[in-house]
Image (cartoon, rainbow, N blue to C red; front, side, top):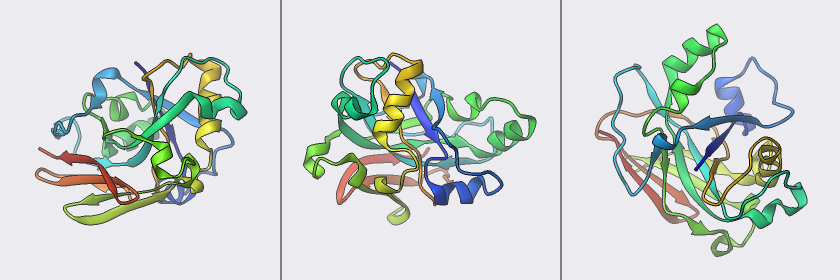
Length: 206
């Protein structure tokens, strides 16, 4: 199983963390290791190799069929379920790596860094993946809100782009990018992710 993720896919988030960079002209893709997957409400244990770990709330798409070199106009046939995920990021480590021009793998793909909630049918929310509202609550307060219509690159475009380089297989996950509002977590925080009013994720920080 592969976990692919998209960086810099919401304009306001780009201003938040990448104000010195223009919007990308094609999807910015990185990957997470299979061991980074965190599901079934298992807690996120704060590692000790960095000082700050941030939540980045995202819509996650599950691939339903094997595909390679998928045309954008047919990409919608390759998924039918989504959830809310959290791309946990070692923020201070990421900054150090960026300053040196090094890859991000260890700050994005470490064990337990890809939390996913319960998958739901897109049809249950109107059938349009580009018309979803999602949000994250931390300890009962909303800290991030996103709308998939605001993506720089649509889900179909992301799938078509990724399939140029990787054969997408049934069960692969794609984290589609985070909106503005990322922030740090600490021990005993409770994170809850929603699509519309439907809670699909609950994550305890330990």
